Image (tube, one colour):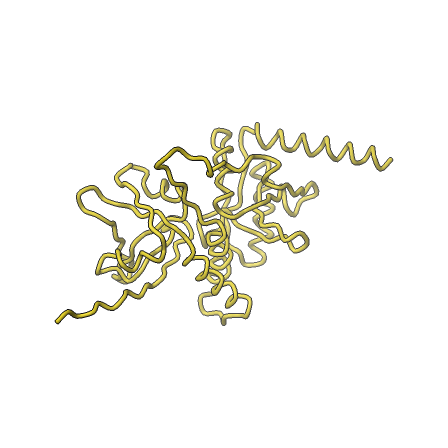
Length: 258
């Protein structure tokens, strides 16, 4: 009987995987705090998940559960032609799993690797560089989902640890910077008038920003950013069309020559 149940469960799982690959459309929960898929840490497995639903009606039911815990969310439709790129880009977010129809009777959890293979970036052609910062990106998403709930909240020990981890991961990374032909590095002015250098964790985040193909890219290690920042920039702003998180950067003091 146990073997029969395992076979039935395996068949159901394969059926679900086939549906996720071939569905005409699926629906994903988007955090309004980050403009990215809402990320959720499963309390039992500690998997980092995004929330997918088979129908819009089911997504609305799942979204209400998050709204009840004061997580403002939207629902985004994924058409079939975008499914593979969506799944593949989850790797650059640091996500390793998906919760299907979370909060409903047929809730199911899948490992991302069951559905799609992680792209092999170790054997790129000469001169090609792949840039991604999954650990930093994931921590940034969790941190801003929580912080933007209530900007006036007191920093808990959990948030302090997350912030420390975020800064460590930031400093370990390489980033994509937009370059304007014949002008150099691009800067962005914020609502308060301050200026920051936009940087991107991965190609997908850069593509959102460069839809009109106006910019080229430069790959820069974090350690080199203070030396190349435009003089008017206070620091960098990471993924301005996504998590949109600014970091002030201190420049090295110039030594005067006599």
